[in-house]
Structure formats: structure tokens, C-alpha cells
Image 1: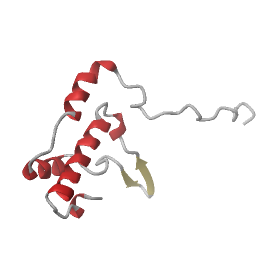
Image 2: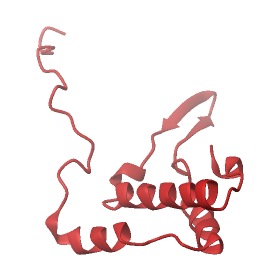
Image 3: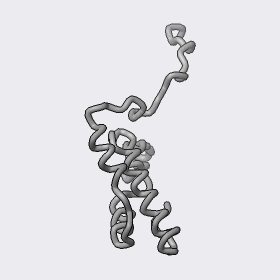
Image 4: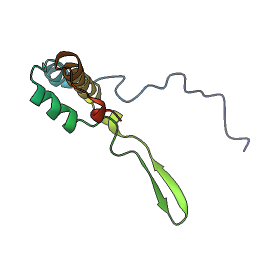
Length: 105
């Protein structure tokens, strides 16, 4: 075990979206520019965009439990979709006065 070097730290660790590709900037601006002005559209957004990663889960196999981590941060438009969902939730709660607890995990 002497060959393991513990001096490396994860000080410079950043999520996958930290360095965003400029190739997707037009698509990011498009998603960021979507305005939520109708309650039916806001409900659709909240139903389609999940509040948490649907891939994260624990799987038991042969008496052992394996954890599959959240993979949503691998989506290059993750932050923009989360922002769109937040705008939809805010519209429903603030403008329409609706209870949005059913869309909260």
C-alpha cells in the first residue's frame, strides 16, 4: 500500500458542466429564453422535467447493494432545464397561486 499517494486532493474537481462547450451556447440561450406565461405549459414543463435524477437508485443483487449515482449532470443542458423547471414552478406558485407541492421531491 506504500505505492498509493494520498497527497492528491480534489481541490480542482468540478462537475462535468463546469466547462461548457461553446457549440451548445445557441441551444442554451434558446432554452433560457423560453418564457412561461401559461399555466398549462408550466404544468407540462413540471411533469416532463423531473425534480431529481430518475437514474439514481440502489440495486440489490445477490445480497449486496450497489448504488447507481445521479447521471443528470452529464447532460450538457442540465442547468438550463433545471432553470426552466424552476421558472415554471415559480410561475404556477407566484402568478397563478397554485400549490406546487406535488411537483417537489
